[in-house]
Image (cartoon, rainbow, N blue to C red; front, side, top):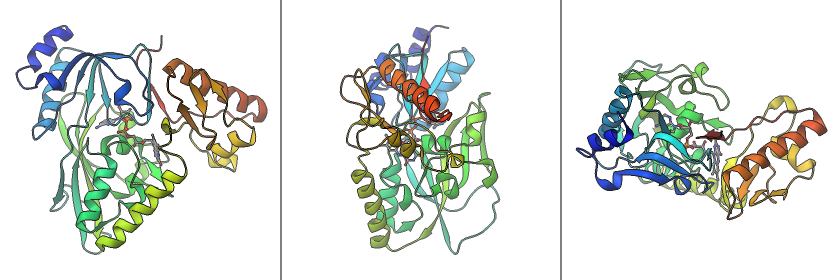
Length: 322
Ligand SMILES: Cc1cc2nc3c(=O)[nH]c(=O)nc-3n(C[C@H](O)[C@H](O)[C@H](O)COP(=O)(O)OP(=O)(O)OC[C@H]3O[C@@H](n4cnc5c(N)ncnc54)[C@H](O)[C@@H]3O)c2cc1C
């Protein structure tokens, strides 16, 4: 079946605004670059998750290549865009206090509370929900861009903690179209690594384990982290956060390695190494994806030539780079 056929079958349950052929992807990413998706689907509302399942089932049956996008805050989409179907999850953003996990786990916290979150809820939306409801645990990641699904897939990390620390179980749609609920052992996650990177699954929803906290204390801690990000220039210009991974073997953060080589401010077309942070590459306004990627490679080359260290990109290159 063609994408046109897929599109037709989806009109039974998706509205025209949820089904967008030839949609430019730049606005769906924090770098604000990237060409068109052949077909972008963005299910929303109460039936959003169920509609994701339907779309993916049709695409699976028909062998149509599928790319999942959450908040697009850790990706660089090519100027040529993405072939096949791009499923954007941000419209699937329900958050519910849950009774208990479905799978066994080792009890470890006094009076835990469980939060069930749909994959497309933004991290900061969850942090604010926790603040409003006096739930503690999510403060460390308040203000980070992106969705819960993307954060769990990436095993997002900040201030010495990873999102996997809070994870009890995930509801997944696997590549064979089966839904499963899976609990994971802590040792299946590592720095910027999750078991999901080895599978072709859609994370549908996630169960987090939190504790009861004082509303004001939770809000103050979340706000402190938002302010810290603001001060570090995270939101100053379009970027995908840290460009390269850290590696403790190097003895210092990657940002400092880049700083010490004097590469802050290095520019290639509209792409620039942020003058305020060596590990953040920014789009100064009119960068192309090709320019950003070329700057990534230029920084890698300069660091390698100077120090014999090969930096590993943390950002993911998505789409057609041929
Ligand atoms: C200003 C800024 C600051 C940042 N700070 C941090 C930080 O402190 N720590 C950190 O770790 N990261 C940071 N990041 C990077 C980014 O925000 C995180 O990695 C975030 O978790 C990515 O989520 P996303 O929804 O945007 O994922 P996307 O970029 O949309 O996708 C990332 C990957 O996850 C997959 N994916 C997304 N949703 C699903 C799903 N439901 N099911 C299966 N796969 C899925 C995608 O296919 C893709 O492979 C920062 C980014 C920015 C722009």
